[in-house]
Image: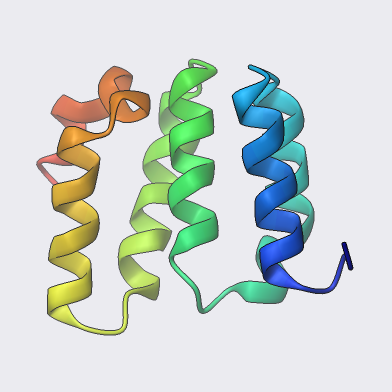
Length: 99
């Protein structure tokens, strides 16, 4: 795995999440999110992780960034729709409707 490749770091974070090492997964994503700032995937998963860690304000901030990074209205709507069904977003789901 090469650290500069998005898929490598993303897979590493997903592996950590599967082990229920959510804080560690968050650390991995935070360490590379600036390198891939135009991509909504990293902030979306950071929103999920923060929601699971009880960090509601941070989760909403990352979710807002994911929406801002969407390249079209259609992609933005897909992200919103996904969040409504994503179990990881349950702790903040009611506040996402206003975004």
